[in-house]
Length: 188
Image (cartoon, rainbow, N blue to C red):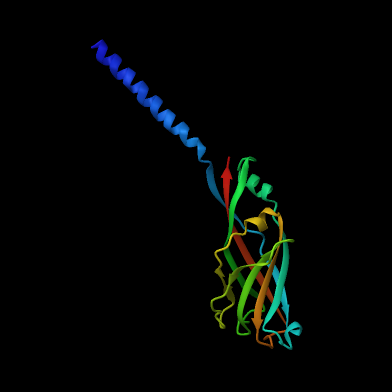
C-alpha cells in the first residue's frame, strides 16, 4: 500500500513539474493587448466664402495637429512601462454637421482623411464610398494601413479633403471630426 501511495505521489510530482516546465517555456511569447485611443472630437467650420469658385475638384476642408503622448496613453491603461506599441490602425472616423440644424450634405460628393508627420509621406487613412446627400453624417471606409510610425512620433497632422459643389447651403457649417485608433501593445 505504501509503495502504491509513494508511486502515485512520485508520479504526480513529475506531472506537476512537467506542466510547470511547459508553461515556463511559454514565456518566450510576450503578452499582447489592445488599447483604444480616441483623441478629443475636433470641431471645424466651413465658410462658404472659401468655396465660391470651385476651380479644383478636391479642397482641403480641415487640418489639425494632434499630440499623442504614447507613454501617457499606456500609463493611463495601466500597462507596464516595459510595453511597446507594436501596431496601430484607425478603427473609426466620422464627420457630422453640428449646426445649423437642417443642413444636409448635398454640397459634398466625396471626402478622404489623411495623416502626416514630418519626414513621412502623407497617408490616406479613410475615404468615402458614397455620401448620403440627405444626411448629416459622413461615414468613411477605413483603409487597411498601419499608422504606427505616425503615432510613434507623438505628434501628427490630420487633414480632411472633400469634393465640394458650390454654393454651400449656408454661410457657415459647423462640423465635428471623430477619430479613433486601435493600438496593439506588446508587454515585454
